[in-house]
View 1 (tube, one colour):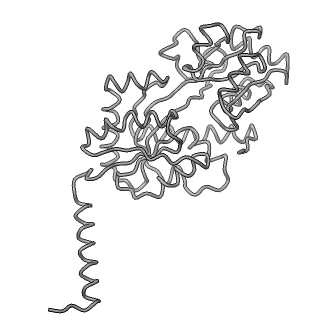
View 2 (view 1 turned 90 degrees about the vertical axis):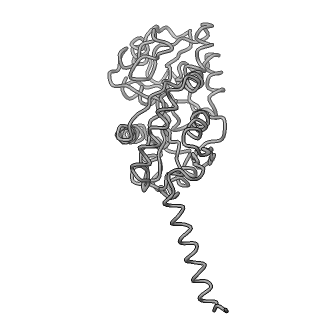
View 3 (view 1 turned 180 degrees about the vertical axis):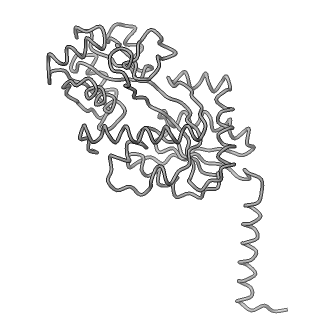
Length: 324
């Protein structure tokens, strides 16, 4: 029997459609899941993703792998995830940069709230306010008093425009109502080096990076930036309790999914991450890099992301921050 070309192609199309339907109706998950990380390998977000991914994969029965998409101040990776099908096979590792970009850039190829569904807030990382030992201050209140008496004379270093350290400093300046000069560097290492040498007077740092220098009395720690005291350094007050109620500036990592992802899949993924965060080896590995594990419901993360977007919008506008 001979078939016409049109009939042949019609049969091929029908076969493909049936195959696609069969794949879609298979129990989730039926193929590997990727986590898009908008950074190069080795950064904090990448470490968090690579720690939880294999645990999720073991539990789900499918490989969960990392897809690093750096560049464009995280916009390249974010857009790739936003444009992916909402089928539960693509996740996105969001960070504060995701929320900052909403106000930092006037034209965006995606909408962080509209184009993504929240899955889970994984962790937060407090920063620590540190000063050079030569500065005659022992507390946050002392620093604010000194800043008011020396407008424009104190300096704070950061690892770049609109980064977490820069934003922590700008929020501090705004709430304390003091004039401190921002000095941006190309990276955190040089910023810390110049603080240690006394070239700048203050900085914000991760606890992990600052602790060796704090213990050696090469820098002085005044407070942490989180809403609650750090579990690893409970003797350090928060900036909020020390002098500025309401101050909070932390680094966070959260998983989002494309907006069309079905709620039942979101719920399943949320549960898998929460399960992974309870494992002793996962907790040990993540806490060793300075993060504090959270875990949240999708609704809690959704509210948190919106509050972060609003906070950074005010800060970017008030400090007149522009992208480099």
